[in-house]
Each structure stands twice: as C-alpha cells, then as structure tokens.
Amino acid sequence: MKKVILLIALSFFVISPSHSLAAQTDRCQPVKAIFNSSVNVKNGVCQMHLTRKEPQVIMMGHALSPEMMDMALSANFQLVGEKAEVVGEFALLEEEVNPVIDALRKGGIDISAVHNHMIGEQPKIYFLHFEAMGNMNDLAKTVKSAVDKVSYQ
Image (cartoon, rainbow, N blue to C red):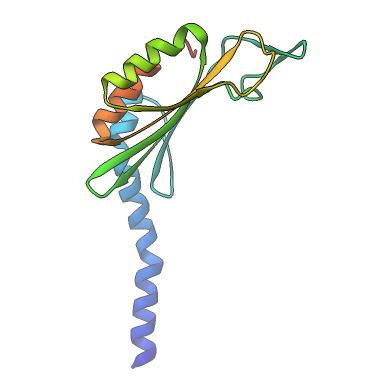
C-alpha cells in the first residue's frame, strides 16, 4: 500500500512540471504581446533581449561585434505574488541616456546605475540598469517606451 501511494505521489511530481511550463509561458503573454517579439521563458522569468546592430563600436583600434560589446537592450520580468518584478540593462549612446531615463521614470521604474563597462571605446557606451515592482503589463509598456527611444535595429 505504501509503495502505491509513493508511486502516485512521485507521478504527480513528474507530471506537474509540464503543466507548470505552460503556466510560465502564459505568464509571459503580456510581455510577448507588447514587445511583439520572442520572449524566452526560463525558470519563471520572461526574458526580453534585443541586440543592437548599430552603432559600430571600435575598441583598441578594432571594430567589434555587438555581441562582443554586449550591445543590447534587455529586461527580465518575474511574477512575485500578485505583482511582477522587472530588472534590466540597456547599452546606450550618450544622447540616449536622458530620454531613456525619462521614459523609465515616467512609468515608475527606478534607475539603479548608469556607468561604463569599457575604457576608450568609440563611440562611448553607457550601461543603464533599472528595476521596479508593479503590474507586469504596465512595466512591460514602460520598458517598451524606453526601448522606443533607442535605435537598436
């Protein structure tokens, strides 16, 4: 009898993750709809990542790929109880920093850092980190409004 109960309990845990994966994907629907792009889902986190194609960055006299320079706009969204948390980082040109900060602050998203990762790159790249907790739909719309201030295509 104990073996049967144990097998039933184990089968519940084996079946549950697939149901959980579908639920995780459904949670990311607002982010997917707002960004109109693929959003990766990993361990309950909705990951939006856009690699910038421009500008071409020169480092130590060599043109380096956007992937090498981490030239991206990224945000991770996770449900925490009834609310969602967003944490992200944007690689920006100097003239993009203030418009992006304005867009994020307008939607209640806090700026946690603005700094550079490299020395001597041309053009100068600033990395802006942000975070907030609130309604996932509202947070995604705010991040999208900040993304729209940047030329990433």
